[in-house]
Image (cartoon, rainbow, N blue to C red; front, side, top):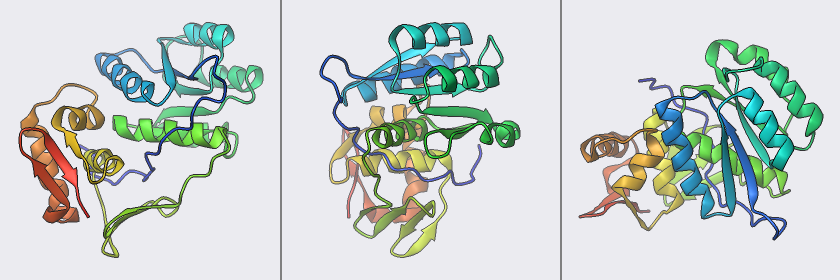
Length: 244
């Protein structure tokens, strides 16, 4: 498992739909796999309660057909998607839907080639491998930006703070490096700081496939060691809660 700390991105409420006739629409175009199916299902469930409709496309042709038929407020494009060359797809999307922000998912070795195709602050990229919660957070950020709402630069709870601009997690002023899975768990807990979060919800947010409760507990113990055991309270029979 890659234990390098990922870029820290906040998980924020998405603004209400700008038009009452339809919810905000996200088009998710990732290479088909069992993990992708689980990821799409989890994202759809998480985003639906915030007024977002997520549609999945399995290849480049389906992506273009869906985009032309119904449009999208945001596109997540896998640069290894089957069908037409993804770089050509990206150019077509930018030409036909110039106001649609795009999050590209890229292998680390292709990152440099993709960066030159992105349009400043409108587009974003995510390096594979990633945790589901990081993609969900970036989707929220892009939708907020498209709606003209600023994102805070610092998120905090008690002595825990996340400096978004610097990409740092601070505990009582001390920088802490988290693995991708630890980071995903922290985001899930921080979203509901002061409230209990169920084990099943934590598992779904940090992994793209079903995992045992024991595995969640193991990673919570890792996170406790880094941010302080007193900050994560066990809610017996339910899950965990982030306290100040």
